[in-house]
Image (tube, rainbow, N blue to C red; front, side):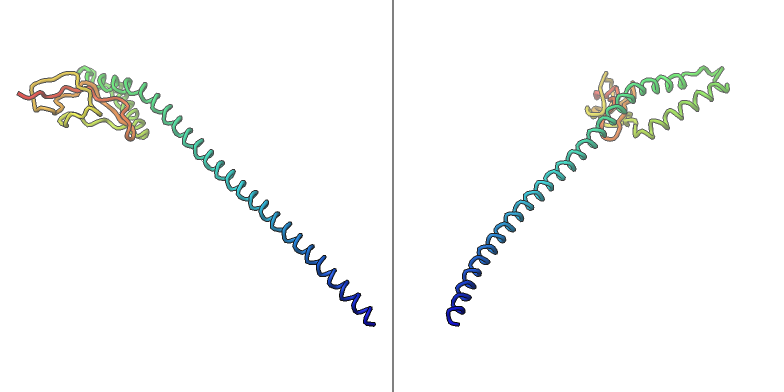
Length: 174
């Protein structure tokens, strides 16, 4: 019986070693798989961040392109608006009360409304201090130095961007 017990103990000890080796192997394999999974997760997170950045850049680029297209269109339309304003200002008194002149005034108001809706603002000029970022001095005349005396051509901004600087006559003093 002693022999049998010794064999079981020896066999049990050998099995314990095999089980310990197997358990250590499984733990190592589990750790390896965890590391691989963490690598995949980090890779996925980088790709997700790259995609978010790509999406943001694409949206910013589309917004810039839309702004550029609007700006180009407005820069071509503003001179027409100016011509319409000058035409209304110079209507002959004999036809000033006619219905078609009233229609032209209505068109000019709608035109101005469309520019307002697009965020286009007229640059304040007459009486303002000369600002080379907003005004283009085309002449000087006697008057308050550094002040805009007269607007020759209106200037416009859209947001913080100058579409066209106001062409002005500036006081030179004396």
